[in-house]
Length: 346
Image (tube, rainbow, N blue to C red; front, side, top):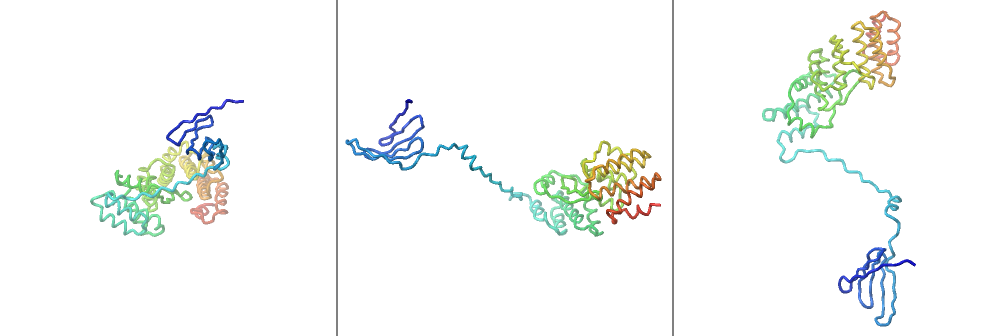
């Protein structure tokens, strides 16, 4: 038979603290009636007749289940509440007027709203005028494709903005209110990038507009100011190709591997540059590397095939050129440049 340990401590008259190996309980009451909370959670009531030795004990509440907390947790997996999305930032009461006004038109599709910001705050807050020009230019660039007036306005605004120096206030506004806003820019046919203001969308969009207008020097200068990213490299390599800077293309594409559509096109333009320099074997290696991954987009493959066909024609490899051009013709008869390639076949 094991030993048992228990101790009863009087707290105040009528209240006693009961300490045992099972834990701590307490009892309340006096002669005749006493309610006891046991260490295992059971609550009992004892009725007695003083001086007679007679008593009656009744359980009021059963003991706690002995199932461990960990076992209960296994039976009832906890449900993790999804935190609410963060509230979008808004200008505070003490924010400057230009910040409040510019924030109010951030999603506007009316050029007049951005013009109004420039007129109202252009002198006191030049950064507000600069950002308003960026947003209006990008609006014309995105929505005015094929509209000569809109494209000319976008080229003027973005070209001017690309030549300005960013200020601390401008960077703070962009990181606070426009951190995730993107605009689509078609770097080359088949490769379109969703770019933020932090990703040099102004520079790359301005360069595309300069290139479309035939101003290669302005386009090249603009992209050369951009951060060295894959999309900036592709834009610059295509511009260098159009300008005949073939050695610069080769230098820029050293070490490029076929990781995505953009790098596949870089390899294709590398092959063309080698061909222009007279290195035909290196040119074929570039085209082979560009076409090696079959999951690249159709536009990228078609551009590579046409580039290879032009090189084959220059080397009098007419059958190989015809084969490449006919592949494009079978898959996309309307692909840009295909009609010129067909006309060049003997």
